[in-house]
Length: 309
Ligand code: PMP
Image (cartoon, rainbow, N blue to C red; front, top):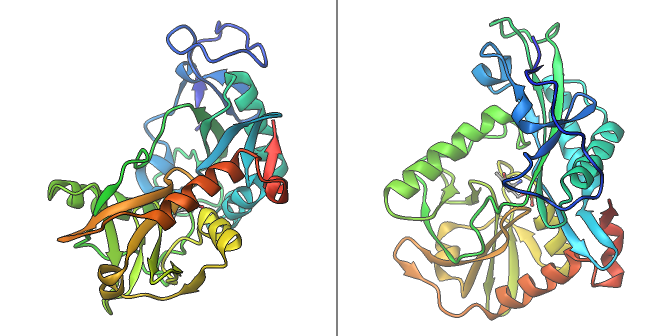
């Protein structure tokens, strides 16, 4: 079974137009065509809806002097390819890249969050997905989706992160139920975000972001085998030479500054970890400002990380 187009009479898409929220529904790319998001419906038997049999990415485009550009597009799509491979979903990196640029142009988006998703459509409730149909969509939204740049209050989650021995740290849809549980539990206790810590007291990551801390002027990128190998984390290590190593919850509590990072979160300072309140965060501020310049193509050394639309 596949997504079906329920309205054939959507207005034509004119490339390069400005977003017209309220006047024109968002356009998305679905299985080879740009379509109005409002015209598409997934059948209730969609396999991915029942079992999380899909893989996604979270990417961003930014307004640069030379127009909109996607930050580290090949790296995001390579991670998605790995997830698709492990699930056995067909995935064409070149097609996904072209679809991403096309959807941004169709929506007239410059600063945007981009969501590609490859999934099993199905129609069978069996767990063998070998013969089921596969789909690809790419959507973009001008809305901020994570942490929103505020200094978040973290709490150590009551839940453990999916162990990599059970679920590879890739962006497999079903794996995110673990993040949803942790986010829900943290919010229920009045915090903004959950920090996963393993049974040995080692920090893993947050629900949708990796963790860094600074102590005595040294910057540490927390490393854990159960954490997603974040592209923002990789970017920040390249920018600063931060040391990547495992770290304990106790070290985080003792740190001068803690921040989390991700495509959506960017570089986001942490205000508190449970009862521990952090003070001023000059290192985080400086790094957030540098990251903002890099993603907008303002640092010549790193413009190769941008793909123009
Ligand atoms: N960890 C998790 C669980 C995430 O979902 C994300 C967001 N993709 C990250 C870390 C940060 O990864 P990236 O910097 O590649 O967006």
